[in-house]
Length: 179
Image (cartoon, rainbow, N blue to C red; front, side, top):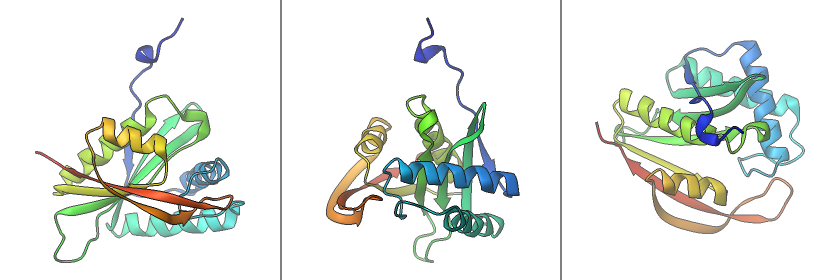
């Protein structure tokens, strides 16, 4: 019998450039998450063209140094991703926003979300950031962030729409990073 503790630690990598194959894999992850009900700025059904255009825009931000993009793979390829929005206003050079922490349904409950968040925190430190902020409409993600030491700072009711319709609340978190 295999236990969760017997699984190898997921290896997260930061992408400094994004290949066409990676764009396609990231597109698959985003479409799956939206189809699974994740409120991540898109409505269902999410077209492949729209999802790909989003990732092409992200790739341009990565190339310009405005974003850091981390991915984690399983035996089928990219299964999860998270971004850091590094380009902040001049009075906020010390912080970054965590964005689009996505895990394909085939990779859920395997520690990938935590691995991605640990990697995001490491990259943020490496980039000289001392404060991270994020928001989530997912209760499961909120529990993960709280377990990892993120501080909840409020919930806004009816902040966004769920991909299949209907309003959802969004909870905001922050985390101070130590060296």
